[in-house]
Image (cartoon, rainbow, N blue to C red):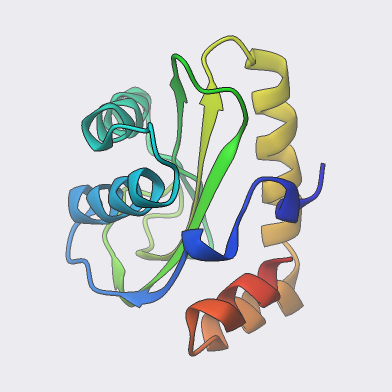
Length: 147
């Protein structure tokens, strides 16, 4: 799997404003539901919030990989967003987060879900990729930095 297989340019947002974890997840849900007709905003947000209740998806180094499972979804969908200011996110290193790579997966794809998370985590562990993401000044630059 490659990032471009799950992330479309319309699902990237550079320097979003968001002052809380919940507001960031709301923005991610809005993007996903706007770019993928048939996805309900409330269902996406509920899925992401439920996962966060089990434990933060903040993996450290200013990165979070919020994710959730959705019934009726037929493929993995991703949203990539950076925030204009780092947000408190209960990350494992207790540092605020400014890069959010969210994924939504079909409810029945547990194994594929884990492989997708691993691919994204590997990509986001690359220092050059992180630098390009943090220096992106437009949605298109952000998309190109990750793919």
